[in-house]
Image (cartoon, rainbow over all chains, first blue to last red; front, top):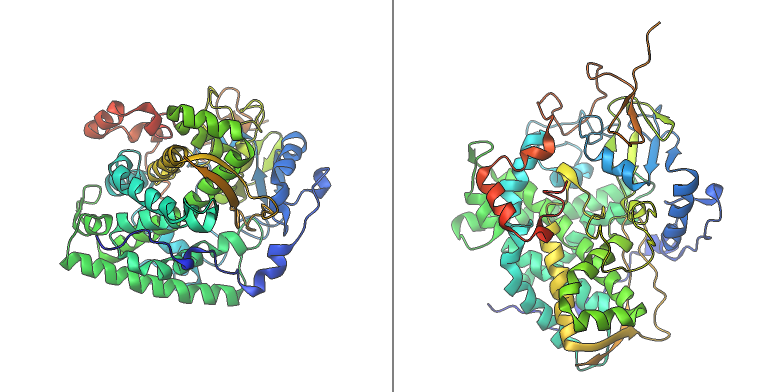
Length: 455
Length: 68
């Protein structure tokens, strides 16, 4: 293999788009009471934990008027662990929502005619029209590669990339950890699993950002973008679709040991046939959007926790068997995906005394559930012996549990196995960090400057 | 006078469903709700081969599947 995780300045995070400068630099006041809570305001991401405490205490079912599936229905932020637990286990009462203006615009292929909705349509893909097929989709198509069953096969490959990235900066004593480690690692890993050329990573990075753009720069709980933003994003995603289509065609003629080849060849038992190019592309879109930024944010947040808690680093170094528990605690405390409006009420329901009419959208605040004191005692503490460790909501649970949880966990675990093996310490670089996060519904550090001692 | 329908999702749950199963559902895109999917979580283990693999794994790696 020619490509390695060579040092390359392109991995420094690009300057965010100018049009989002105000949103990115906005300062929000830490909320002191319910009237001051707005999870979706610019700058609010720096005070989410404090806002969650207020929501848990005063309004665990928080109404957002007029923001349901129709103008006469509402949105609701659900923040308690127990409520989200129940909701995600009943996909009949709480199915995936449809949004106004998107449900009836189908072409003959089943794709939405409105290209601005391309990312959503592709991420959802057309192979999962029923709950049963949704589950079979995971079992047959994604589990063998990125699920809990298939992920461990990638241990050697992931370890190699982790070591190569560390090699790039281990003699320098300090590093910008996001750009030089947390961001490139999942890009190398997912591109390799998909079987795409690593030389294409700069383009793939750009398209990956287009895929998550609405979740970072979109407005409100539904991640709404302006028509101009939608158009620009659709153009990027259109190019990405052409690229993926080319990869699918290439792999049909030049098969390899990779997920793209697998999808072109597999006899999908659930449907009794092979997949079409369009179906393969749909799965690959989902893998690409799901496998990059989320793992990046998790590893970066864990480095911040390590840097702020040197005793934890020492404990992991002394006993690497505890790394898996640290990764789970890191994901619990700083969930990369803080919340998603991916459920609606199909029936009239009542949650904690709040009446919710059918058609309402439920914004499941996974990041708040993870910090629910009723579920996780002393929830701000990293506790490697927590009895319910790993029961967080970061990957969601139930039928729609994240299909890539296995590969993400593997990357996080190997990252800390190697980092604790090769370093003696990891601390924040004085005067270089503001520890600010991207806006939107994801929780991702822009940058993390750390100092370290080589073992 | 009809008694209002009010069904607790599970003992201890804070969620009550206010319409019977026979009530028409609000439209939802992406899922066919007419399927028989009562025991959803159990179905992931319905393949004997899949079940055997899952059960043989370190439980840590099967969290979110078997537990859910």
